[in-house]
Length: 299
Image (tube, rainbow, N blue to C red; front, side, top):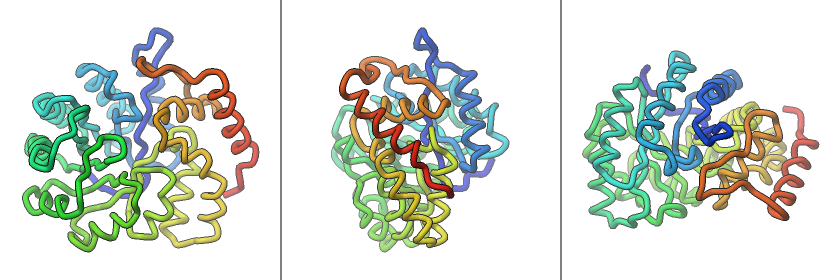
């Protein structure tokens, strides 16, 4: 399937069974449900998908499951995250073999590289296949920042570099990148609580987190923002923000899975070193989630 970088693309959580093995039946059902509710693609398994706890073979198996479930309807994007450049390249090659339509390329985990090293890493992945590539820039989480000038440099050298997931939390980056590259790249918002602002500044897509639990509301919010329907966008956004902010904190995986459980689409199981929420932290999260769900506005 040809890659089209636009719209709402969930960065999906990874469901686990009681033994903490990947629950492929649920992964497939969840992906279908997201697409049935208007999402434009599936991105898996990234940070929200607990990629760092998944083996090489588990990632390949997840791609197969999702492609079998929805690959003829929407593009499936492989999140390429690895400690080493060599493994990232191998993952990219296998993602292409599996039938993924595109790659979302993360900087290397753990090591906070400089620009020369950052560039070498993503270039190796870009060159590994002919698949369309998105660069994932998240300086808050990864400690490395792909600046707009550096992003422009990559566009000049790699034809298959076609999109950016901008998660710096600074919506000015959207206009800055556009100033340098025009419409050469599709710019996506990568933090949930900046989506309306990002679209206003020119973003054309959203790699979303809370969409895992609330896809229809997420798609409606994005569409209202794209249509510049300020009244409906802000009414839905103001309701949604307490939940969307859960995407921007260290325990975002646990929190989003908790919202999924509360809406009846998932469970709270996570792989260590993550642990499920407990005590006062759990109580506070449940109060926020249940208050929001009890007061959901009509679209």
